Length: 276
Image 1 (spheres, rainbow, N blue to C red):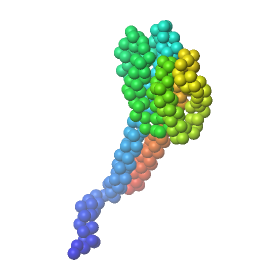
Image 2 (image 1 turned 90 degrees about the horizontal axis):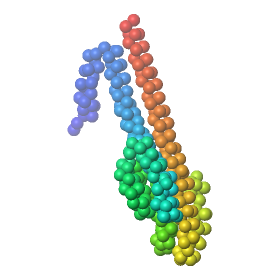
Image 3 (image 1 turned 90 degrees about the vertical axis):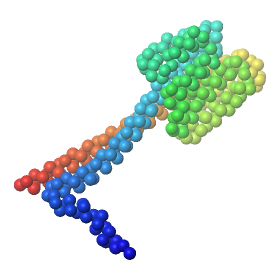
Image 4 (image 1 turned 45 degrees about the vertical axis):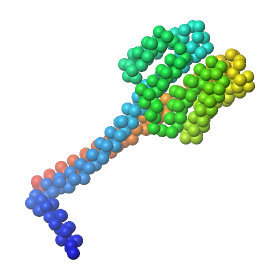
C-alpha cells in the first residue's frame, strides 16, 4: 500500500532541492514568476476575447451603414420604378469606397446600377448581412432586430408594393414575431420597434386582399420607415456592446499593469534589502 506522505515527498523532491540550492532572492523571483505568468496568460486570453468581440461588432456596423442607402434605393425601386432607382447609387458607392470595399459588394453595386430591380436590391441586403457577419450576431436582441432590418422588412416592402398578398401575409407574421422576440429580450427596444403605423397600413392592405395599389405602397412605406428606425436601434446596440468590451478590456489592462508594477516594486525592494 502506497504511503501518501512518501509519494508527496517524492513528487516535491526536485522542487525542494532547487529551492535549497538557490539564494533567497532567487526563490522570491521564482515564486513571483510562478504567480505572475499564469496571471498574464489569463489576462491575454480575456483581452484577446474582448478584442475579437470588438472587431466583430465593428464589422457588423459596416453592414448597418448600408441600410439607409439600400432602404432609399428600395423605396425608389418600389414606389417609382420608372425613375430607374438611380438616385442613391452615388451614396452607396461613396460608402463602399470609404470602407475600402471591406464587405466586397462593389461588384454587386455595379451590376445593380446596370440593371436596377427590387429582387437585386434584396440580394444586396443579404450579401451585406452575410459579409458583415450581421447574420451571425450573437445576442438575442440585436439578432432579432437584424433579422427584421436585413430580411423580413425589406422583403415585406417589396411584396406589398407588388401587391403579393399571400407573401406579404407570411412576411408580416415573420416581422411581427421578430419584433416581439427582440422586445422580449430587450424591453428598451419597444419604442424603436413600434409597429402601430405598419399594423394600420397592413390592416388596410389585407382588407382588400392586396387589390389596392395605394394601400400596397402605403404598407411598403410604413415597412421601410420601421426598417430605418430599427437600423438606428441596431447600431446603438452594437455601439453599446463595443463600448462594454472596450471598457472591460481597459479596466483589466489597468489592473494588470498595476499588479505588475506592484510586483516589480516588491521584488526590487526585496533585492535591495538583501544586498544591504
